[in-house]
Image (cartoon, rainbow, N blue to C red; front, side):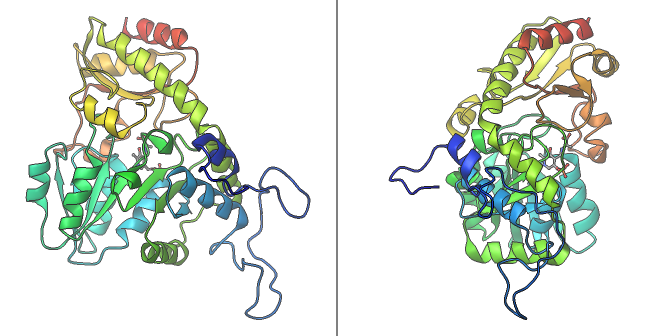
Length: 382
Ligand code: P1T
């Protein structure tokens, strides 16, 4: 991209960062370098790539683009959000301690309590809306503070700046799982976080056709450690998957605007429905952290959750009845999805203090015509 005095805008970066026309043919779209290895010029001399687990030009384009979108110095792409989370967890060693929010994606919690716990890494979960509780949870050996915001599935909004300060005071890394917001709505590095992490399966990919993950940061030694883990552990995306995520990223801004508009309209509609007991959406004035969300986020996205007055059985009935909203795990695609977290995405927190209400319904509001979505929900609520 030509150098300019003013930094290019988000939409321009999404389409051009790391994506110069290809040198040999001028192809405007980054090619899918579907190769596992690269011929070397001489022993010890190559053209920047040697083996595709270590690096692949399609993946490099994606990593450069994601770094630009999060306004970070570097990006690393992984084969899934969990592979990215695993790389961060591998920065820890036996005897270290993690402080994590008490409402996170079930798989994130599971990785720490079922895998890293076995390796000697302890964890405390705490309601991160209360900073005093977070300070109390910090120990001498706390090396990681895991901040997912907005949270999955209760849409709590956490103060990235304040939590990063607490982490840094205790010499711990502040890592934000930015999956629900996407880089278009929230840039955690600008609020003091050390790393921002994504399941690119969700909004960045945007079309429910690929699984991927990413980490973006500014600190160079941290990049070296994570790039080492990316290669040593090997959870890398293949070239086609990297390309699909990169293609999704190009339209992230326009999609997020529509997700946010549809999300707000549906949250407001649900909020007035007589059968709905409560709606969790950061864009509603009634959300307890609405002011913080306005400071920290550009808009509020397409994720929301709610409870029906008549409880769990009614929630499950409703989730099975929608016609446009597909009953499915995952989120962030152009099509709307509905699910019951405790029975689906958050089964691994069942029986713990992290368990969401059994009757909680979660929506990933897509970019379809909003009246059709509201009609679908109205008929399913009955
Ligand atoms: O599925 P994967 O790409 O490995 O990403 C894991 C992940 C990480 N962080 C958050 C906030 C997530 O929501 C997820 C995956 N979540 C779902 C599949 C879901 O339906 O909530």
